[in-house]
Image 1 (cartoon, one colour):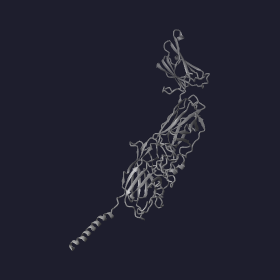
Image 2 (image 1 turned 180 degrees about the vertical axis):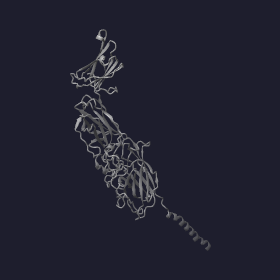
Image 3 (image 1 turned 180 degrees about the horizontal axis):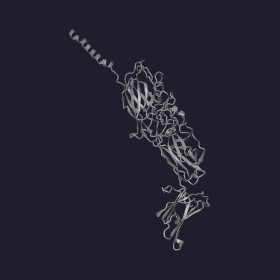
Length: 572
């Protein structure tokens, strides 16, 4: 019995040992290390943009053991490197910018309080052993918003507390990074890339640290109408009605200043992380004046050039866009605050204002005050010209360059730090435009063809050119010379007539001007209403004689016969 009974404590001891052995590893189990997955929210960037908001970069981290209560949370430096210049606005002399790193989505409904870490060296934050959320902003000693320092193509956030989330997760969001999209627009991929690293006293392993944060394509399609007007008559509103038009190449290319349009009060609506507000402003952090806030909405510029002296320019002030929720308004300056310009007159039903002409150029600016991300917006502005006198034969055609605004010409150049200077407006753009013709000034000329002129043997040709601008229907009087160019046998140099006044006739003999010649003659007259007559006969018109009217090849179109429509018929 005793021998058998002795087995009981022996069996119990073995079972207890096995239980302790199997339980010991569970009590001392090491939590998995912290790992972070990097994701981005790529956006469409304008190829003309120098300060384009790239997509947010999100690091979602899990694992690790929370810092013991009262102990300092380890710090790290977060860095973002772009394949182009970073152009986020610098807000202070210490280099701190509008680019922000947010811990656990401050400003969201689940974590509404935002606390800024002062300075750029980071903040020491104490742990709480995982007993509560240390980055909810309720404690001033636990900031959850950090400013980035912009240097060339990088943005660095220094001294960021890296608290292991343990069984939960932690989100680091990097936002308000602006980039120069112009330099990558010509690349094969046309993408802005961001490489993320976390280093310093502690580092974090990152999955997918290289992210696409923006795809680049042209944002603006511009066009204009073309009118034709004679050089020799005053310009009138009805004859010179034309337009400039700005259209999106993708539906988010045109944006208001804030989600409330041009109203700066809209900044209060843009404080929630992760929301696309379809505006030129990014995340507007109330505790940091200027952070994320653009100076104005998308602006356009039309530079009307080669305006002759004495010609006035009138431009429509307000345009309706492609939808009822889209509109653009003329504003006073290229880089100043939004200042709507009201119409001062009405032309053909359009509310217009006269635009000053300086050194032959009239420049006008427009700002988007309402835009729809669901449609391709386009904005149309009527343009008119007027004058009391004719532009004159030396006046070139009136052209226009259209672009986003403001462009490089509005800022000093040569200093690379100016890309981030707080004195420079956001947004800013590169101007790739080429001139388009608004008013084609048709030359005040008539080209006559004398198909046969001869001075050989007994034959001679008499030629007459009449300036018929003097008439009973009040045609504007014109005058000018005619250049007669012969083509054929024994063709001499061209002959330039004296000035042919309105209501007069100029005549000549081939024997005097083109001796020994046989062929045709083109007469280019610097007035609009030239007509002619030719008479061929033998000496004394004894045996053979004939007369004809020369052909009017052009009546106000160019002499190269390019197909430009004449201002009006040469016959009247």
